[in-house]
Image (tube, rainbow, N blue to C red; front, side):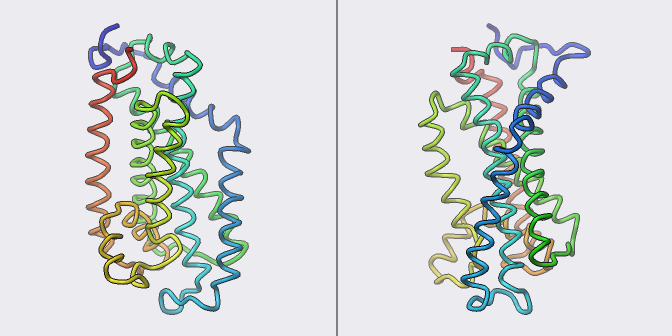
Length: 262
């Protein structure tokens, strides 16, 4: 089988079909892929807002419940964006139907785009549903819609790319679970979802600034309150740089057919 980078897409190629397949894959089990993350985020919201609403002051005149919602939205968006391509690839590899993706004349860029677009759609769908549900608890108008859209799409793109890399690397479910449990979950939980980093000791504030997920959540939160722990422009530069580097890395793996042709 020739390398994916040498595949020659033809006019009217099956790229839309591959994208449709990835979209339908999570949409047909929406109770698991969309509703379940919303319920989980709602439980976090109910528990933390009930316990900490009157005892935690984050930003001036911003209730803790309102502060918490953008963080929960982004955390759920990131985790589900990661899960979409990673679970698709590992399931296809284990069941043996990955060959049906490799046989058509897709270029590695088309495969990358199809998996990534589907992961972004799933992440945004989960985030939108959480926002709608959260409006029943607290009014949460958007102060900067463009910032919200940019950070949401770029963040879902980054975790979708990371999910693609994890799916290529993992040969069984426990390897994928290790990738998620020891990298994705700690990075999202320790990134300011439930707190401002200025509530941490100086050492942990410094550590948090090396976590790219912190800038995703902080920039996304800025779009709601016009207040953030760091400049949104700095956060955007870091998030954009991470997105570009990870995308180039994933494209390189796909072009080589990493763990796909063997």
